[in-house]
Image 1: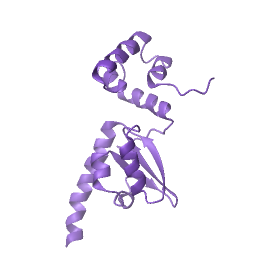
Image 2: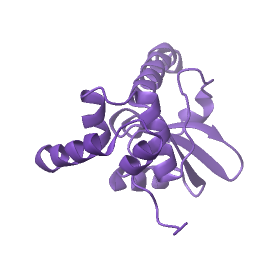
Image 3: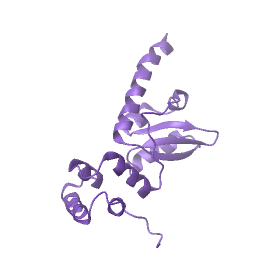
Image 4: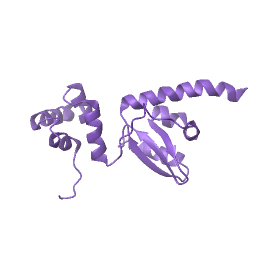
Length: 155
């Protein structure tokens, strides 16, 4: 093996989730629309979201996390800004003495990564990939938590 990082499309072809013609068509579409390859493949219904997320996880070398079925430690979450969570889709879900782990949907967003690193305040930032649907679910849970607990803090 050459050690070269495999692209998501290559991973999907190797796993026989799409064929080379589908990949070529989607890459051509990507040149025109500037959409993410995965979004194009999902829109055409050539891959399932779970399969795409597993391929992206392999591509980026990041663990895939299921936020929908994960316990959220709100003590960890409340140390990060609502903007980072709601606007940038960086969701902190685990912490130890030295690090904080955040779920992300777009690991290529350098601006959000920089913001997350700043808000980690010296802790090592670990990233895990999650699906957009799982992220939206976690954000809804976060908003419910805020609505439920902010009035108590103001009393």
